[in-house]
Length: 150
Image 1 (cartoon, rainbow, N blue to C red):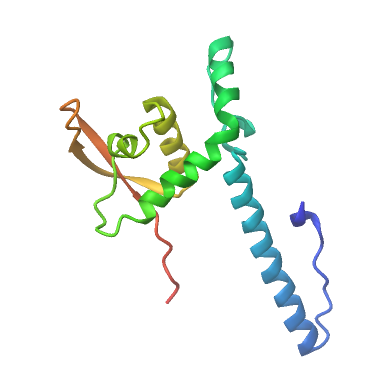
Image 2 (cartoon, one colour; image 1 turned 90 degrees about the vertical axis):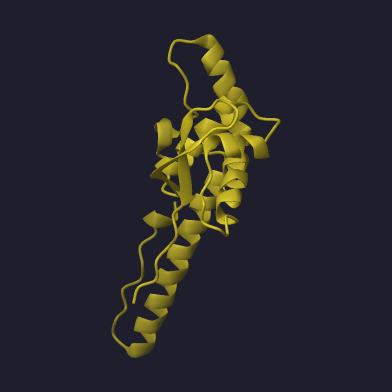
């Protein structure tokens, strides 16, 4: 991995210091890009020991996990895009996200939302809204926005 490549440590002149800083910046951007690419492909990284979640010892759960693995990252990114497009800041519930993805099951959508929470992309606001379909209060999630240093 790129993290294992040592940075040159010249530091003996201003030009070298600038080059070292530029290399470090490019390295950081490359690492971020690699992580994003891995998440898009469906890789789970540190989540669930790198594999899609499943019930251990259950052949049907293992089959379902194997089937969703190649698509999970893409579904996660598509869901995240809806959170990013939430211009009114209302957030979304799992039930509302499910309406946006009628070809996917509740289990598939709720699992991707959980992964987005675990990855730090969205968060549970603590607010609830009534799910019009079930009449039950459900959690509201919002995108985690980066804050600029002042």
